[in-house]
Image (tube, rainbow, N blue to C red):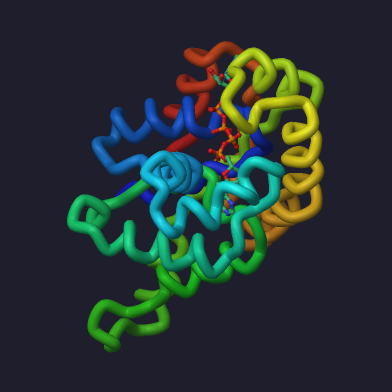
Length: 195
Ligand code: B4P
């Protein structure tokens, strides 16, 4: 069963690659950024709260994100694997994923079974230098792709998300891929790396 997390700074190509790999393995591509942007477009209560954080390049508060992800992972299409793109983005969110994964379906799983479920997770760290990220994002031009917001998103990434590299390295779940290559080349590296 494919259970993948795409980790990486803003503009590393998480969305681009997660969508290709999800098509390849026929599993849902769950992007917290996309779900949030849909909510913003629909002016839902979640969207109205999330917008101010996204516009500033801040992380949306955990409580809003955790409920949203838990709901999404309960849906039928997510029962046989998934790709999480842009989630987790801090240690609280990573702890939450681990808790969700180890939660037993019937309460009877042995310790070994739980460990196996957690071990089935693979985390892809897409590495791209900051300078390249800024130029990619400026040329994409989404609402949150202006210089001030990009600078803050990178700062937030280095402070809050980058520590997850160590978190997943310790758990031997991390695979680092050089994302500073053509889109097709990165997809090929990923297909080779995913077991
Ligand atoms: P996201 O939607 O996750 O966006 P991102 O990190 O900026 O982009 P990504 O890495 O997916 O880049 P992409 O493939 O599109 O987050 C947006 C905001 O939502 C956050 O700032 C935050 O406020 C909020 N949020 C989301 N998840 C959250 C969470 N879990 N907790 C709290 N808040 C959360 O690629 C970028 C550009 O590069 C594209 O134009 C693409 O075409 C280009 N590109 C990609 N790969 C390339 C390559 N190999 N070569 C050249 N260009 C490439």
